[in-house]
Image (tube, rainbow, N blue to C red; front, side):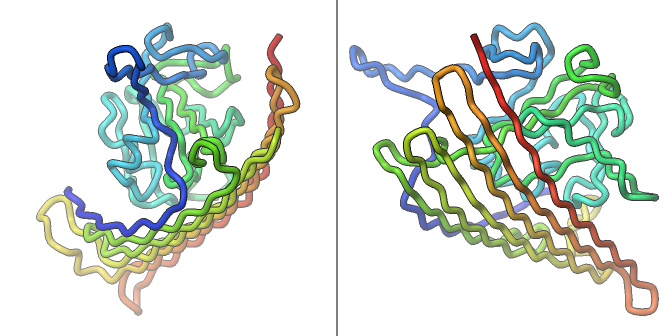
Length: 283
């Protein structure tokens, strides 16, 4: 299945750069991503003892996935079912069931078994606000508790520090685009700022799609389909010292999917409020 996406971007800031030039010979030095899923402490990817795959914000910006499931499609040993729909997405790592995976957002478990019948053992995160995705293959019960024998998927969301241009304290970003694979229009907006030890970011995105292109024949589906996805996210971080940080975030996700003809139409609705907080201290 191929997708063509066109985007118009107006911004007064720029994402953080992941490569830097040395002043001596101007050679580009690419630093390894920092991961935490392997040991629960920060390590460079090439020093992690586990089987890990990391998707950076640069890759997400290039691929422009419309859902978190879309962002995981090309990872070896990770199988996806219905990646375009947050309601029906299922993930399998090395043959595991979707409810045998530990899901983390900013270090907080997100395992969700609240929807009778569909049981979406998944997490909802707007790709626009994701800084990094870590996929750890293999069990991690000793690190994150019972239930993760298949693996761990950890999402780190962006802060204002990731979005601000050097020397700036405040920024805004607008984005609009069209995805012909799902006949989908999307819009997103963010506000973010940083002052002293306080870092805050607020973002909203809306996607409205119609009939999808079939992966089997490459043609537009004849089944009437209307899908909408709205996401709101906010995150406040406070760093009183170099060795401690406190973060609190609120997320709201709403997914609507109507498909089928009027006399036999199926309607699906999913709403989720998520409030999470964390405190990290190192000595």
